[in-house]
Length: 275
Length: 100
Image (cartoon, rainbow over all chains, first blue to last red; front, side, top):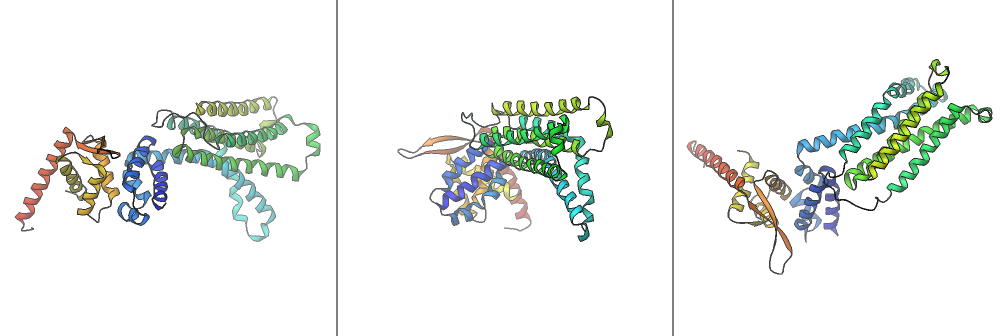
């Protein structure tokens, strides 16, 4: 039992630090080495699983992986976290200004600062995920999709559908909805959309870790989550924009094209990732 | 010569005596250097494999389970000879200074 605990921790550490084929080989060796030893003896003779795995990793290869992970994480986290922080800090400034929260003033602006770079985040994240977790990177071919991945893909599609509903209200300006729309409803919708993006970002991070540690096809979940976050950020940027040129004729078509492109690329990337 | 080189030399030396069962190799060296963890020795062994100094193969003891054995390659023998020379030079240099 103890030996199995050590091995399961070693398994996680090895799959994080080493490429899949090498991790599988190391785990096979460790099963042999660990056989019949207690947890205490394993810790004494072999050290902590993470230390052991780090010793096995080639420094350059491991650093490259950490750098790729940092870029992929930034691509999905920045558009996921900043909008919700912007909305919450905006609310805090209005509701609690008497309690000295003025220092939060710069938070809402952060989101507008990163919004122009959203295409860069999307293209970098998608391309890097497709290339890094490509087939033949040492992992054997599996037929069934990873457990939970399908469920999360469905969840992400529902989240994207909600974002499209918000986009439709902004772009089509349906009279019957706008008449019923109060400030509170609009505010609640904006908060829901940012929370939706936050959850998508968390799912994207989870999928990123899973793609490294269990099955590279989790990158499909990462790419769809990224597409959801970027689409959400685009809608959020439009919603909070003070740019009057949006009022010019045909502005909806231009914006709609952007949203369709993000969604379509996200879906194509997801499909390719599942192969 | 670093401690890591010494450990590498020891591993190569043991393998120069004949093919070795990986687990046994680690245990023997750990018994001699108890302060060095087996995981560190295993990391050196893997690196030797990666560099082509050693190669592994699956062997079977009569009636027992399939086990992984390690043997020296030609490159490994060259590496062993080079490390041995460095070690002997160092030992001679130390003895000139009176360090036994």
